[in-house]
Structures are given as C-alpha cells and as structure tokens.
Length: 158
Image (tube, rainbow, N blue to C red; front, side, top):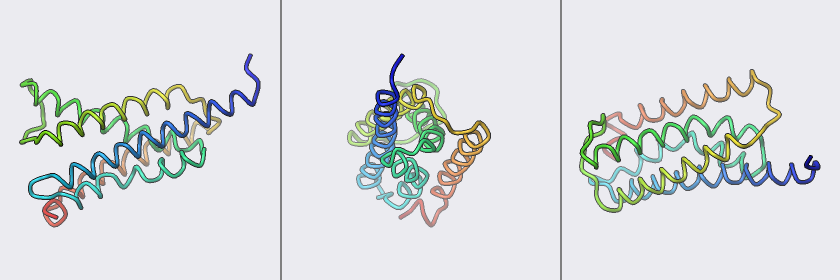
C-alpha cells in the first residue's frame, strides 16, 4: 500500500498533466487561428475559453480540474478524429481545406487530448459524485456553447 506522500505526489503530477494537456490544446488551437485563411484567431480564442479553468486549477493541484477538463478533452479528441477521418478520405462530418501547419496541430491536439484523458482517468479524486457530475456537465455545456458562439459570423470572420 502506498503512503499518503506518494499518493499526493502522484495526484499532483496528474493534475499538472491535465493542466499541461489543456494548455497544449489551447496553444495548438491558437496556432491554428494564426495560420488559418482567413485568420480565425478570435474564433479559436472563444473555442478554448472552457480550457482556462482546468489549466489554472490543474497547476494549482485542484481536484476539480479533472472534472472540468474531461469534457473538453473528449470534445477536442472527437473533433480531431473527425478531421483525421476526413483527411484520410473516410466519411466525416468535417469538411474543409487544411494546411500543413493545421494538420500538425491536429496531431498535437489529439495527443494532448489523449494524454489528458489518460491522466484524468487514472486520477482518483475526493470530489463528491454530485459535484463531479455537475462540473462535468457544466463544462461540457460551456465547451459546446463556446464552439457554437465561435461559429457566429461576427466571431468566425475575425
């Protein structure tokens, strides 16, 4: 059986992995926004707003970071899978033209999402079930809302 010091260190490292994974996704999507034609910086900034909480909370070793990050990690992994399916010629709801930098960033986002998901699933927290579920669904809703808002013509074109 592990002592409390080992467990605390392990939990802290998982918190930092979740935070770093979320930050990697955020940065990669900012890069995509910078190289998009037309530039879509504001769109990608809006899309990544829900990631800020797990980034900050994770680097502060807050257990709630896990439950706030999970929906975005799942969301971005699914989006990347759809993009990869499209790029490989398989049926996908995603369409468009992807420049080499954007394709590279899909790999970064995919790996970061998967890494964050694995760390989250291995991270036992003492967050109560009701709080965990509420946080998960709140941040899932925020991620979907952020994506929807980012597609509004005023934001999508900036």
